[in-house]
Length: 346
Image 1 (cartoon, rainbow, N blue to C red):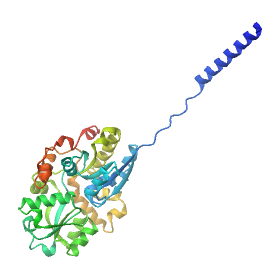
Image 2: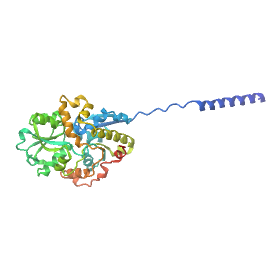
Image 3: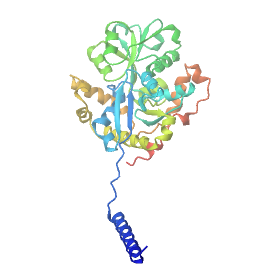
């Protein structure tokens, strides 16, 4: 080859290489595509119940979005139905009672509460006014029909424990699943149940109408300790332990969002909180809803942490009537964690 042409070819190649190098240096990098947040579906065991108020209130206040979470809230009438959805993989988390984590461990399933909303159940055993003269305590429920939200629900657990405590085994009364809210009220009015366990705002509605009276009140710490012997952590956010192991970041974000809501509940009036809720939650009688909310505010924790004596009390209650819990060693440390709420800055 002609030496001149060879030198020219080398020069052209060098120029091209230099140009490419310069292009790579000055060419701005393509912006990284921000990955969409993973969707978290939360099943609530009765989303309009005030015991589970933090779920919808967190959404209303925009705290999920502020954490970059894509959260969808669904509702089932009873906590046991929500639990089944979690175990089947249909949802990633449940807002329900902490006692399910103990009951499930006895059945070989591992779930863990990561935020505790309620330090008490917020449940009330209501007796139909027509039966109030004959049912003056749980010792009087022999032969009666007692309403619960669902079979295997926390209301069912508590009903069995309270009756058994008074010497009445479950074989001596009938348990009828009647759901909550309007279906519970209808069951009382139609004489399908003689007494039953429900929450606010249903309690206030029944008291106002005169259809039922309070038999056992577990809406505050004093009433709960009198009935159960200690604080009874109830409404909480729980997840499958296997999911938690691989979704620490999502768990931390959920904890921050819910703790902010619990702090909101302790720094705002019932009227201000009610104003944040959808109209269909408050209903046509806003004054009744606000009154029910005021009665419920003492139940909420301020920081989402598990009360120190809570797990032992719940274990004692479940073991009091459930042989599968009583006969197995339950490792309470595997049923909850304060790890994520402890990381939330005040």
